[in-house]
Image (cartoon, rainbow, N blue to C red; front, side, top):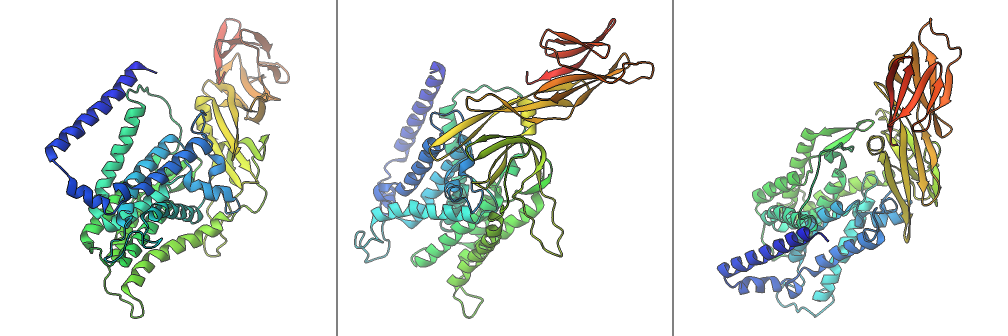
Amino acid sequence: MDPLALGARFAVLVASGLALVLVHRLRGSQTVRWRQVRTRLLFGLPLGTVLTAGLLAVIYLFVQGGYGHDHLLTLPFVSWSLRYPLGMVAAPLGHQSLGHLVGNLAGFLVFGTLAEFAIGHYPQTRGQAAFSSLRTNPYARVLGFPAGVVLVALLTSLFAWGPIIGFSGVVFAAVGFALVHYPLVTVAGLIGQEFLTTTFWTLRNPIQTASAGTSYGAPWWANVAVQTHLLGLLLGVGLGVAWKRFRTDTVRTDPWRLFVASVLVGSSLTLWALWWYSGVDRYQLFRAPGFVLLLGVAVLITVAASLRRSPIADLSARQVSIGLLVVPVLVMGGIALPVNLTATGAISAPGDTVTVADYEVGYAEAATDPRYEPLNVSFVESPSPPTVSGVIVASEQRHLWTRAVSAGRMANADRATVTLGGLGWRESVEIRRTGWEAVGGDAAFLVRAAPGAEPPTAIHASDSATADAVVAGRAITVAPRNGRFEVTVESKAESVQIGAPDRRPVPEPGGNVTVGGLRIEHDDSSLIAGHEDTRVVVFRAAGA
């Protein structure tokens, strides 16, 4: 362990302890406030929130392999389809990365605590004893909280539009529940969430060195599951309103305070980030419509939580309030069911593939997801299905078809690892991209995949690439053929007669070969074309 990093962590802990002790001495005794907390929470602690956070950590560390493995297992724990029960159950409790887990845990520790405090472990109604029934038993309430959280998690998976992975829907539900009871405290909780996240990364990486480099990936807002977040928020607000209406001793929330808090919370949590695909690896952000959606949701929350007189004669204010939140949730669920029931046909990876159990791994350019089935509406033009390029993983058994690694990332990094598996097993597939980039032109490349200890297998061969330079009236082309690269020389001038285009394998490093009257040298990861006294670099190696 790095002594400097260890010392930095120790300094952070000591400074935090000293600061807390100093402020505590300045503030004096907090016996009354602590007693108020203990009247609502068993031992004064949000034990249900802590148990739920522990469950998420166990799933990440031991089910997904976050502990003891270099690569996290995620593919089998995504909600690919209603026909894949494991994914539907595991998706809202799994995570894509450590950063994903930390962000959701920090949010849930803050807002889950507020929600659990609002519910309480002890009955607050006069005349009710804590242990008089199962409903009022504080230990039962502690265990009931994570059980309710898991049910909400399953709803976010069931009603999500398409595949998801992550606990963020439940975090938003906790935000919604807390927002109804403590609007301004919920806004302050956003700062607390950021502080917890900063604290974790400070202790994990107290001193960090970084350098500039190329990064390939979608813009951050294209990774925001807005529908799932909105679904979770409305579920939480609905449950919060129902609980508040059930508890007649609660104080009415000021509508203006709730509206402002809803706008601030929704804005901070990027509820406005509406986006869609606009081409291969292209995305479009609809910020203005998203902002209108944000205001509409804030108004909906305010009306539902503040309504005291029903505008409908046959319904009570409580029924109208809950209905305002239940209806959009049911509409989202009605859309989600047919979306998540697609993929009735065969699912396979494109082109040549390698197989690991029920998985297929291939590579494609501008491939269309076979699970995509546009809704047939006579008066609406069906949108073009989104296409992707890169390493494709498919499993008919799991109704899985996804791009695991983008073509841009493969071109930049030349290699990647795709982790496949299921409950109790995993296997890594090493992907390598090797090829030749034409000077002033395109690239010719091969993509190979090696599952486990097996030898690499070619799963994709690109088109040929021709150098811009014309040497002695000859054009030089490199193309992948039969798992290797060949160089072809053909005449580009009437005065140069070489007959049919001449073709030879690319020479080994340090070697050379004569092709079509040109001497092709493989020198220092470059292909150099020579003729008499002329030597020109025409290709450079990629992924060598």
